[in-house]
Image (cartoon, rainbow, N blue to C red):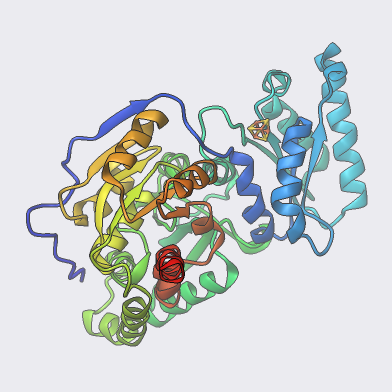
Length: 426
Ligand code: SF4
């Protein structure tokens, strides 16, 4: 079913990985709440944290709130630390007030953060205690969005992983798709599955708790995001089996992802070609238009979003770019292997970060485009390098065929802007 041919000269799956541990420049996992609260319409994310956490959420997400928000912060002051019993009692009071005011909440996530006082609070026990009080109307779970040793996409991973142990058991042969997608993109994906005759399809996260997401030994699952390592491990523990595939970015990645699932469900090759032919052609055309100024250019990925490996595959194979370095916070062969296999050999593959050493490599290579976090983009721009903020890739719909042109466009825009500025300056 999958007609992707590996690159000549071998891919990067067996390339030795440069592992670095040092100072890192990343956002914390609370960031995930910004897209998760929009996706899960009956959920509320109560961050147990400091004023810094509250500021991060307000400034990053506050502007997007049109109605009652689905997140908030219970701020722990130093005085709350006088006794942990008081802190638990205060949390219980906050939750009671919230649930009384908001009967629409069916799933409440207590989200831990990194101030040391919060780390000392046992939120798992608090979630269990509160679940007993509010079941069956409200399910209370907990996860950590702490910025210590995490990247910003790990918040979603931790959130989804916290949901897996409480999913109802099912022995049904079914597909579970894990990873939060914008509704419009999710609808496109479900439309493709329907046309291919693949089902039943369950979603994690679902738009609300009644959507009947189940899991069991006859569940096979596919990830839509490459940062869901803990979620995958939790699904494995429930007996589900992962379908290994490149991620659905670009025409080629989407086709390979769908083909791996179609093969698992015994979909006829002719039907697969018939269903995918038109969207594939549209995607190829859109990429060709958007990627015109990417052809032949070099790209350097600094580790940030954990999307780096599949995006390097997309840019090298579908936009004709050359990767200098593909850095990712974590690289797991079971998750990233299929994409690494398709990246033409040549780039350094690095895991983790020692930011000064990596910046030296960027300055030496002077790539046409550097994909990095917000904190590094401005200094690099000041040195005359074009950059792309990795965080935008998570906030913009980029999966599947219909978004493939937009995905290429996200990378070509900074280069177009730069050549425009150079022309004007000339
Ligand atoms: Fe800052 Fe930690 Fe709160 Fe994130 S969780 S905003 S890193 S204090």
